[in-house]
Image 1 (spheres, rainbow, N blue to C red):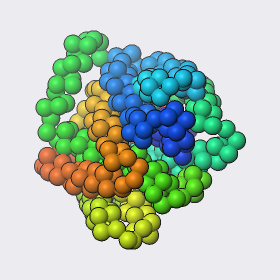
Image 2 (image 1 turned 120 degrees about the vertical axis):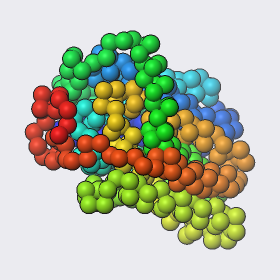
Image 3 (image 1 turned 180 degrees about the horizontal axis):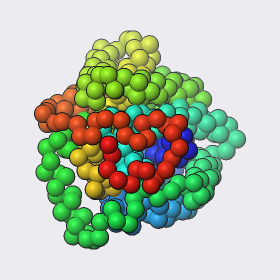
Image 4 (image 1 turned 30 degrees about the vertical axis):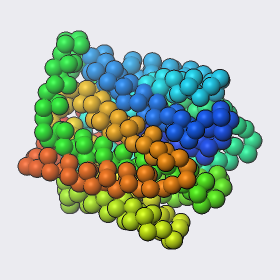
Length: 413
């Protein structure tokens, strides 16, 4: 459970960095006298930083072990969060958010690599589902807490809060997370070997297919994250506090579906549950676009669609990630990095497009959610014929079992 809590919290750094300040995004934009699309660039910059940082942290963790790069990244994340609170302009904040995301990427990519170090196949999917119980709490609580904090502080105080969240996570990692990649399993070929590894991954049709599945599904959710503060608050007049509650309820669906996935994956299989999640997300996104174009239904029509798009990720993310990493135990950090880059870059591209019509229309957001949902279903065809490696339960399938890296340093059963 200690491993699950630490790794889940590390993967939650991304959602925390994005979601905590969402209720303050309209206020932040007005404070700098910026346009809605400029305010959303602060979201895009953080996502781009999270993507690019993984390209560095993942290969470094394959070469030097998991703990060292992770600790450096957490220290830099705390410092960058404090710097964001002092940003003098919207473009300075955009640059600092890029650095914040770059530093926070270490936690996300290395947490996935640690899971692959100690399990694979169905066992990995179940462990990823367990992590999403912790990961899912972040988007549930972050906007609610952010909305309430705005009663006593400004958006700058929210970035101080992020720094304060990173500090205990740094201490927990330093004292309680053991090394899962022993020296004999580390790569030593430097950046030339890393480039060869990336080339091997991008030429693997199976890996690319699963990466695009989770990437497009994540981009659909990012379109929701970027657009919903303006749509719900500016168009429908919902308060920041109530918006945080709505956002939290949707995220609760993500938690429920991820735990349901962990319970069902052994019987139904990773690929079947992945397909269920993709079809649900595409259907809800398409329904949302139809509702927005027809008009007249209001929140009663769009809120259920939001809920299903977010909740469906609980079936998509654990299974697509486990399937993508299954064949790459030797370079789990690099494979995890490329996987993260795909879905974060797609999300970063979606965020600013949501605001092309300003804060007066929900059509761009709905169109992007529908398009990415359908694209995610289409991407599953690339991985047709894939056989899951090491599909039997791995050493950490039971999360109540004592954590012992020495047990899992060899190949999974």
